[in-house]
Image 1 (cartoon, rainbow, N blue to C red):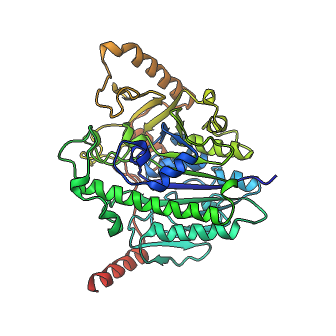
Image 2 (image 1 turned 90 degrees about the vertical axis):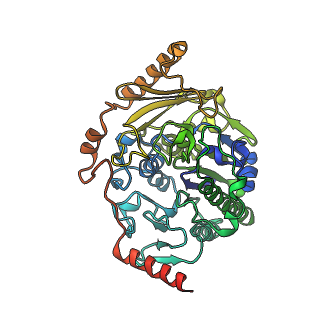
Image 3 (image 1 turned 90 degrees about the horizontal axis):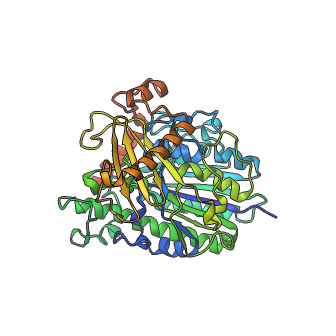
Amino acid sequence: MRKPNILFVMVDQMRASALGIAGEEEVLTPNLDAFAREGTRFARAISNTPSCTPARASVLTGLHVLSHGLVANDVPLPTCKTTIANCLNEAGYHCGYIGKWHLDMHDRGTFIPPGPRRHGFDHFWAANNCNHDYFDAYYYLNDDPEPRWIDGYEPEAQTRLASEYIAANAKGDRPFCLFLNWGPPHDPYLDAPEDYLALYPEERIKLRPNAPETADKKMLGGYYAHISALDACFGSLMQTLERTGIAEETIVVFTSDHGDMLFSQNQLFKSKPWNESVNIPLLIRWPRHVPAGRVTDGPIGLTDFMPTLLGLVGAAIPAETEGVDLSAFVLGDETAAQQSVYINSPVIPRGYPSIFPFTEWCGVVTQSCTYARMRDKPWVLYEDDKDRYQLNNLALSPDHRELQTQLEEELQRWLQRLNDPFESSDEVAAKYYKDGTDGMMPFYENEKIATTKAERKRRRSSV
């Protein structure tokens, strides 16, 4: 019997609450909502290290951040690491990749040649290393080192490429695994199509209870506009699966690398332990296998994605994998859920006090709680099942000492299991990369890409 296809769709910087069906934010996602009802929504899906490059490396390798070594953005994934694509190739799959990569070099515009640096995605390649100019976008196609420039909104072009790949491989002699990685709703928030921006005038935006009244509603509207635009793209993909007759035999995953604070807790962006940063959307559909209409709060982390997908299709899981095969849990067995997920941010960039006003941290997320500490003290503790917006920090509360002790013990078990000494940001940086300064890797965009973008913008502004 032929193994199921895999369509893995990942967005960038989308928080779990920004799904219409989640009932927390007024964002329009009709296609994703319908898809969630056809499969399972994992309400406690967690980004272990909520930053782009570390999270993406964990998805592909099933390793935690200190094991895969990508402790900051723009650090390249070593070619010796085994990825899900390497494993699926061994199991007879064709593996393709479209969209944002962000796992290679400091040059965000670099051409990644065929071979080991593509980490097993050898069948089809239409990717860029990292680009967040959604109307000045490009990709490298297969073995062509010349960039292909996109007219219009980047995710729509990437969706067309994905639909073409699906159609071409729907009835092939081997199953396929296609990773599609959209750049939005990562900022720039207002770089969204005008018709979607029009859906979210400032006066319509309702702030979350944990956000200050001074929050920029225009930015939130742009964030929502991106998400609604991606929702339409996702709906188009699902139509392609139906039209090609393979919807029933394809595992479809929709998720994000991490979330976005966007003013909640008076914070911005990612790399933080609060729900808006670590709690990500995760929807999985596999007709007749994954229960439809199910919502579960069993914890599942990005590190678990690789072994779980391999488990679902019956492929071998590498012995060094640190994530857990939760395929039984995904298929409906709630008793197979794990107790907690480890979260951390081992390198905090200095020089950005308005974005990162704290030091390195680590913690755990359970079915009902979030707990994180700094090296010198407990930091946050929330009973999420009673306090969904995390308004009441119970860390150091005398009335919750027993709960904090239990979570601290759980965290210590994770640190021991992962051989994580919880060192300072500087100590981690010194071990894992030599070129970083102030907790960040240098990054740039090569001259060819930057010049072409400038020329395209000049032409548009002169029309």
